[in-house]
Image (tube, rainbow, N blue to C red; front, side):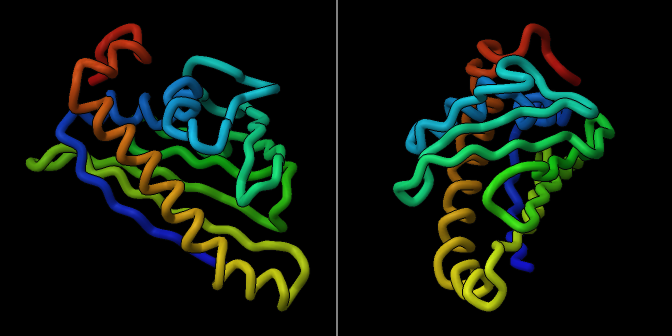
Length: 161
């Protein structure tokens, strides 16, 4: 199993950052390079406990669909989504949030495992881990920029605390 861990400091309230991280619309904006869009389940707004979304995107030149479900939901400190249909053998993404004197610490723990045994493990290590890390870093960059500006108002109706 491959694991990616990313920590991002955001100068914004924890509730705002938590809500932006679960926004379908912001996710779509942050992944515009892959053409990612929600095509089934929750297709706009904020995801919550038990919600599912099917994403369609072009990754590494191949159009794919991936369906995830929110498995854990503990506002405003944690939520996780797990793949229920898609190309991976296993994929789970934990999103952790904590408020500090420096702002909100947003921590991602992304675990995945490709099919095809040893060949899948080699692809994970040689290609996918780097690709997915860059994908998540860009997503977090957009969340941070949005949360730290007035841009959050486009995605959230009211200020989250």
